[in-house]
Length: 339
Image 1: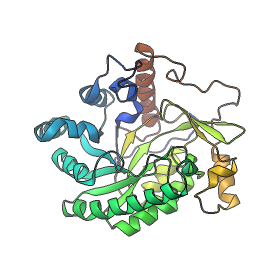
Image 2: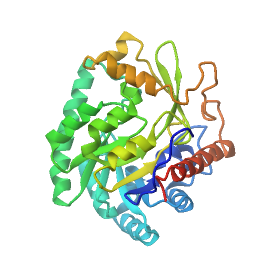
Image 3: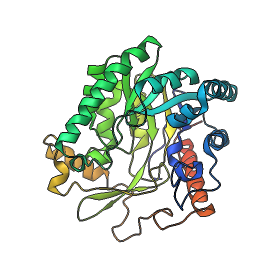
Image 4: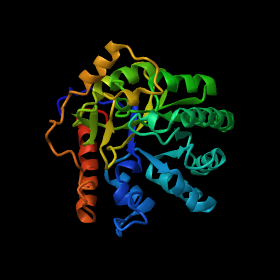
C-alpha cells in the first residue's frame, strides 16, 4: 500500500457483504458446470464475518426471502448475539419493494442498501435510449413507493452507485425521494462513470449512509480502461482521503468490505458510443479521473485475469477469494479504518 495511514476511529463500523466471495458462497456459477460443490451459503458467510472481526454484516436479499419469516427472526437473534449490525442488501431489479422492506424489518435492519439498475461498466448505451429512460422512470417510481414506507419504520434507504449513476444523479434521486433516502457509496464504482473516487465522495458526502469498500487496479486499453479486482487498499482508491472527508463532521458510518467482481470491468470511455446517455463532461473533471486511475497502475501488457477468468474452480478459487478478503481486512486495519 502507498496510502498514508489515518488515526484509528470508532466512527466507522466495518464488516462485509457477500459480493466479494461470490464463488465461495455459491452466488456465482450456480446451476452451471462451474458451480461450487463446497458452497457455504449464508451460514458460511456469517462464519467468515466472525473470522475477520466484522462489526457489520450485509445480507443478500434473496437469502432473506428464502429463509421465511421464522428463519429471518432466528437470523436476527443470531446476529445480535454475535454483536453484528445487520444491513439488508436489496435491489430494484431483484425483488419488489414490499419484499425488501419486509425482509429488512424481520432482520431488524435499520438500513437497506438498494441497488438501482443492472448496468455495469457505466455502459448505458448497451441499454438503448428508450430502455434507459424506462429504467429511470422505474427507479423513481420504486423509490417513491419504498421511501415513505421505510420512513414509517425508521429505516434508511441507501441507494448505491452500482457502476450506473454519477454523483449528481444519485443526489437528485435522494432529493426527490425524501430525507430518509441516502447513498451507499461504493468507493470503486466512480471509475465506471468517469468520476474520480475522491471527487465522487466529495459530492455525495452529505447523503452517504453506508459505504462499500472496493478497490481496483486500473489497466488502460485502446478503448478506455479495465478495472481489475484487487485487495482493498492495493489499488487506486485513496481511502484515507475519502474517510477524512466523510467523517469530518463527526458522524458515524457503517461499511462493508467488497473486493471487486471475478470478472474485470472494461469501461470503454474512449469510444463515442459509451458516452450516449451522459451529460457533457468538463474536461478538467475527466482529467482528474484519468489521473486518479494511474495510482498503482496495472501495466498494459500484464495479465489482468482472475482465476475465475482463467477457468479455475474449486479450492484454488475459494482460496483466492478468502485470501483477498483477509488481506483487505488487514489493509484496512493498517490504515486505521477497521478495529
